[in-house]
Image (cartoon, rainbow, N blue to C red; front, side, top):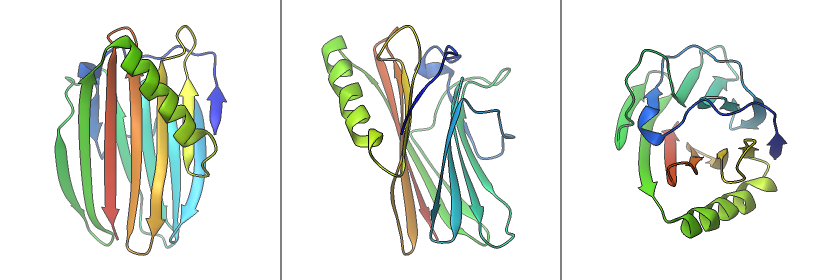
Length: 170
């Protein structure tokens, strides 16, 4: 699913991004909800990047993964992080920041469009002003005992692409 918006993006470079599992929900610019393996999963694009919200069918609380620019919080994503989730399973987060030549960034953004646009687990927002300014999320698997999603944040002003991969073992 591709969403068109009129709001500019708030985050301006990869170094401003922060990862957290305990930030409150932020009003999204676009949302896609998918139900997999008894979980409701909200893929949320923010003006300052993304949140993924998991809600179990049973009343077990929720997991909120936030990768965003958070006022007053110094930036910097971990290369990887693991976190046990009581009553759910294991959580693993991986991220990579790439500085790319403009032609490669353009190619990669086109691939992200192709991967997410027709997928029932995809959400892509293109921000006004530059066709390469995107935030995209894609629930790539969700069967049996694990869930996996990927996200991309493209910064054409600095020719950076941030890719995150999260695996949740149930």
